[in-house]
Image: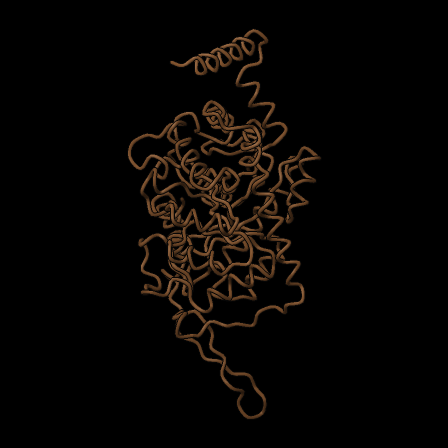
Length: 430
């Protein structure tokens, strides 16, 4: 060992001794850092669990203390989560059926829980995130998880924005008529060499105009690449990890990470064991490997955290619920991440992206709302009403195909509930 190395090791040992002697531990350091830069978490599916477990009846529960889930107000506060992006998600099985209605109901439950509890506050802007931090409240942002929620309609997208939605993932585990999923689980709208259609491009452009964050988690790699080349604003992967560490199709390969860097966007690392470890039980160290890889490849300024709690059931040892985020930050500090890098990961990187999305919106204020409509032959939706030309005398007339929605009669609600409960954790959550 050279004299220089000996000197460096002596300094580290001295700092460790002084830290121990002063009683200022790594845990204290994490607490102070996260108190100054509390976390903005990019993805949480609590709203879905409220539907599955409580049928959205908030009057029957106390959000401060919930059992059988990983998220409640007390644990968010313990985990220094100052802002939570809540997913507004409905199952892919609702595509071509009642996805819009179900999405509205999920927006309603998020708005209710974030307005009926004093510890929470619904926000719709980057400034709102900063304001709630000053008030020591937990900010709630809403993000639609899956483009099937807009039923291929730009007016529907705009109305969701009016209700407070500020982000949308273009797909979930199913293709839409205009964007492609990373999953092959469902057979909706299979196609080749057309990962983002003309209408899909119009969706991205309208989201840019509105100031809505484009989320590429769950999108196919070809769709993600096309969107990043098109979007005028930074995009995010709200809950995805590094493909080079775990080769799952939901993770992001290095070539797309480089493209994300050019876009000045953000990858918010997912903590679900199946996406960070691929096989076996994950731990905090494996999760940190994803952070290290992405930092080395494109820099810490491109990284955030999107835990995906409530969207899956198996999380790494030491990261079992939202109160455990300090454990992850402590591991990154141990790996020589600087406090300025971690301040970015915790919140500043997301704020930068959100502010830039809003800046792009402001440059497009002179643009009129898009009137692009998807061709009916691309939708192939039997539930769409087709308006015809008026008959003589000015009376309206319309024709519609039969819309098959499931079992008829009094058993339909029961069948629907059973399908929801059986498929939620098996097919479509993460």
